[in-house]
Image (cartoon, rainbow, N blue to C red):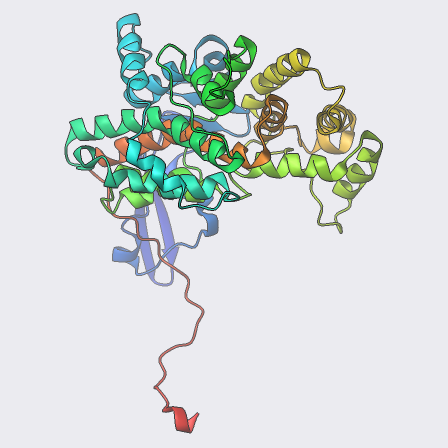
Length: 431
């Protein structure tokens, strides 16, 4: 915890409490209310925890007003442009950019943990072929604790380290297997001669009958998608992982809980919802109709992929993702894909419309990532699993940080109770 820099006085009824104020290295000051109930007998009420800091962290910082995202102090646009995903993983996990020797060792360890226990492949056959890949991932990742007993003791720093490497390494394999299972193709084993992103594309799109070589532009775009989704401060899924971890649950169970939370359309499912919206629009000539609906406050329709709850300016990740989208679309062409044609024209018209620019409803990372993944050939059902494998390193970094925090307690939010007060039970014949 940072040092106390001041005090806030809270007066209510005949009570007056002094609450400590802490000043972070970035962001607004924080009033410490941990003693509020003990000293004042009251709770605070903050639905969605939008004004509550649940922890102190050194990993990621977001300034929504400026449109700024920093990982360990490094801007996301610099990392996406100059770095690569596994280097960002190292940064998030260990707090500093690695030396050449450190990144070589880290990449070696990750690459040689990409295979999953062969018995785990049998789990997939227990799911229906039309199961959503996220449903499969929730189950399979949770089941990892049944296979890797030597990395579930959270009190052992080495076991925490092994679990971290295993999950970063195996998540692409698990996601690719979920995809292959749903389309009826054989599983493709990981290859140690490919980089992280290329290996994932190979496991998704290669078949035993012929050789497949990932295009470097597509691999780079895939790596950027991973990088731009690696961590995003205390969002819903990360908070879920921390809350599960606060009980002492093993890391595989905690990440499975994060995956379940990420599945929601308001969180990780936003890019899938965005592509479904583009398909609903259907053709370029219908865009004005849907833009008009988005402006109508009485119409529940909203343009998915525009604006962001945290960023009140341009999403800094979207700038980099747009560049990748342009590169991928230029490589693959969009002439025969009506969905991508709609996406490009919708982006153009929205950015030229004062309604959206004045309200700062710019295309966000979900809009562009959905376009890229669609162009690559991924079905919309795979968008959120790809998000999950990208965010795994963020979840693990936050989980590891939480376990070493001396002030960490089991999460136990309070409530504003509005139900019935005490009443006596009535026998059934008297009701």
